[in-house]
Structure formats: structure tokens, C-alpha cells
Image 1 (cartoon, protein in one colour):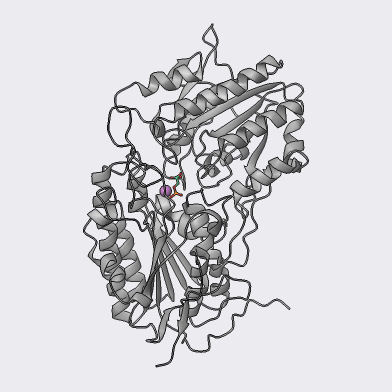
Image 2 (cartoon, protein in one colour):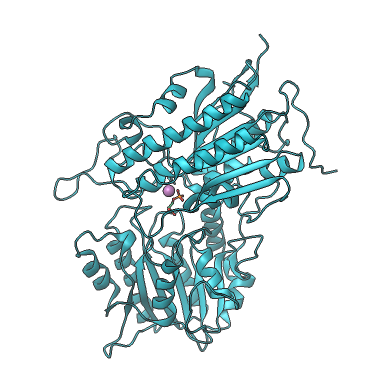
Length: 555
Ligand code: 3PG
Ligand code: CO
């Protein structure tokens, strides 16, 4: 029979304080001027890397190792933290949507049948991130969905686009919009009234996360639902080209716009009777809009007009909140996570990050589940992030504050596991500002020191790792690794994550002296970390977990 009780580890004791530090966007790459981790002063991470070889190693953080469709897929925080927390590899949203589209099952599901009711008399709206980044959404999936919906009776379709430049190169938005417009014009030739209706840059319009700044979602609501925005154009290609021509314009931050007809009237506000699909498969940056679309009681901003719609998410974004209640593809069922096991075995847990990564060490860590497993044993602390800025302006972010909270939690003796995410390498890396990213890496390294010092004081154990690469490579390269140049001879800045492996460093006075990394696991990945952490708490992992990274040799 199933039991939550974990078996005792035969050699490792219980009762040690374990710090788990996730450096967001901190991969391992060749040392050159575009490797901000290399350029930055990072004495703590350097000393771990150059310390005992049996206590520092690399693991895979991208592609199939974290449940993505292929090894050409870079890692990301969702799948990275899912793997770290769940200790197993689950087919992730990107892959599940691919399969559902390929088999056609997406069209047989409850979600599609629910929205289909509107096709005859009303409009189908598709809202989401338009790129081939594969982190939150993928253009080819949107193309298939457009085709599938129109073949199944959708007569009027409006697409509300969010431009990317964060998971893909800045400037690529124009090409993606052109591709979409081509598809839409082909649909129009078949008699389907299909158009882009609104747009905006993902970081300024709609895709905020963890309730950092509701204004972002409001700007999207105004354009998508109300049909109101400061900029009006007659075509989406013209919109994106014109807005990009402004000084310092950037795909991530394009202002909201609506597409209007010749009389200046918005072509696609959402009205009573319409269907809406948010086509991102990843949850964190769609949950806020999902709440605005779905909840009758909603007070985060004035929605002005709340159309009666049939709304479905590409996936269900939050299994605990059951949000949204209708969805096209069932999400991965990430159950029996290490967090749940450990709490049920009495491990008292503290988790902390700042707002923009808070859900990563809680919601994603716990298998896309919000809230506590057991309030009496867990404390999740959110340090408020600055909002309304790009993080290259404040590259230290709240690393110090997070580290101090972790230090206090470690020294308090009230917790067995203290888990943090340090966002700097990732959030500043995404801005593409190399100088700022160097500062960011230094700040993260200092934060690690504060946490490791506290572990030293209490005789604890640490495990320092990362969820995926970002700051270690800030330039787009050709196949042989040479930086690619743009038309004007400048380097092409890489704002996205990478395919690089990430470090795992273990140590601390509480770590049994015989513990070392095993050499018999061929290509370990992030999913091997959970069993390792369970060992540090004195337990063996469940049999179906990916194997531990360590062994204990008697000397
Ligand atoms: C974002 O949402 O900021 C990026 O698309 C992915 O970054 P993350 O996976 O590190 O959150
Ligand atoms: Co990132």
C-alpha cells in the first residue's frame, strides 16, 4: 500500500539544517567576455567550483532532461523548478500540447467543445505570447490551433498578440507577426474573418507574474477586451514596425495597441457571447489574466466591462485553484513532490524569494500547486520586488534581503530546510544589459555567502544549484560558438536562456565526510537533485524518483 513515510537513509543522519539555493539563470559555459558569471567577481561560487571535485558537478537543465520536446529546447524556470522539486521528469506543457495537436485529441476535449459553442454566432479570441521561444507558448502551436478551429467552424477569429524579445532575439517580433498575418490572410481567402486585434510587449502588457504589477494586466485588458489603447493601427505589422522605430524600443516593452478599421473602430474587442483562449501553456504569466477573465468577484483593477464569455486556457494553470476551469489540454500531473513528502515526514520548511521569482520556489517547486501542504510546518516568505523598472537599473535586486531572511531562518533553528531562489542572473540577463548582468552575478554570489556562512554556524548542509542557464552567455552564437553579428556589425545580444548545464555544489559542516558525487550516473539532470536533498535530511527517496547524485563511502 502507498505510504508517505520515507525510508531512513542507511548512513546519513536526520536533524541537519539543509539550505537549498537556486541561482536563477546561472549556467556553466566557456570563459569569455560574454560570460557574465566569469567576468563578475564571484569568489564564493568560484571556491565551490575549484574545491573538492567530488562535491561540485554539472547537471543537465534543458531539453528532454526536464521534460521538454527536444534537446534543442533551452531550459526555463518552470520546468527547472518542477524537476528540482518533483524529482522526476514529467512531459511538460510544450510537449503535451504538441501531442494533443498532432493526434487531434485537443479537438475532442471538454475545453474545445466548450468554446466551440460560440463559433457559429460569435468570435473566437486567441490571446498569448507570439514567438517560437517554447517557454510560454509556440507560434507553430498557434498556427495549428487557428487551422483546427477554423476547420471546425470558427468563422470570426481575433488574435491578441504579445511580442517577445525575451525568450527569442529582440527584433524577431516583426517576423513572427508577418508569419501570423500570412496565415490569417489565407484563412480570409477561405472566407473566415480572421485578424489580429491588439498587441503589446509581454513585459508591459498582460504577462506580469505573481501579482507584481496589476497595471500590466490592466493595460492588456483595456486593449484586448475593451478595444482601447494609446496606439491605433490598421495592421499589426505596421504597428510593430512603427513602435519598434521609437528610440530604445524593444519587443519586450512595446506599448499596447489596437487594430482599428477605416473608421477608427477597434476590430476585435471581446463582447458577450465570445470565446477566449489564452494559448500560453505556461502558467505563471497567464494566471493573472486568467483570474480577470474568469472570476466574477475581482478587485485588482476596474475591468469596466465584463463580457459573458466562454474562456479556456491552453492548459489549466493552477491545479489547486482549478484555474481556469476549462482548458484545452490537461496539464502534467506532478504529484508526490519532494516538498509534500518531506513535510509529511516532519521536515519544517522555509522558502523565500522576491516577488518575481516567489512562485518559482513555491508554486513551481511544488508541482504547479499554490499554497502550503501543511501550514504548521511551512513558511513561505515573499520579499516585495521593485515594480515598474527593468532590472538592469537595479541589478542587485533583493538578493541581500532574500539572503538575510534565509540566514535568519537558518539561525532560528525553526526549520530543517531553507530554500531560496536568487533571481539576479536571470532577471538581469533577460534585459540583455551585459554590464548590469555582471553586477547581478556578483550580488547573487554575495547572497550565497551569507547563506553558506549561516549553514557553517549551525553545522548544516548546503546544496547550491541553478534552474537553467542565462547569465553565462549573453551573445547569440553560430554552431561553432562564434558570436554572431547583426547588420551593423554589433554583436547579437542573447536575452534568452541557454542550453548550458548548471552546477550542483554540496557541502557544509553537517555533511557526512564520506559523501561524494557518484560517478556512475551517465547524464544526470535537475530531477536528480530531489533525491539528493532527501538524503541530506536523512531519508531515502521514493523508488520512482530519479536516483540520488551522491554516495556515502566509509573511510
Ligand atoms: C520569463 O517569463 O521571464 C521568461 O520567459 C522565462 O524566464 P524564467 O523561466 O527564468 O522565469
Ligand atoms: Co528567465
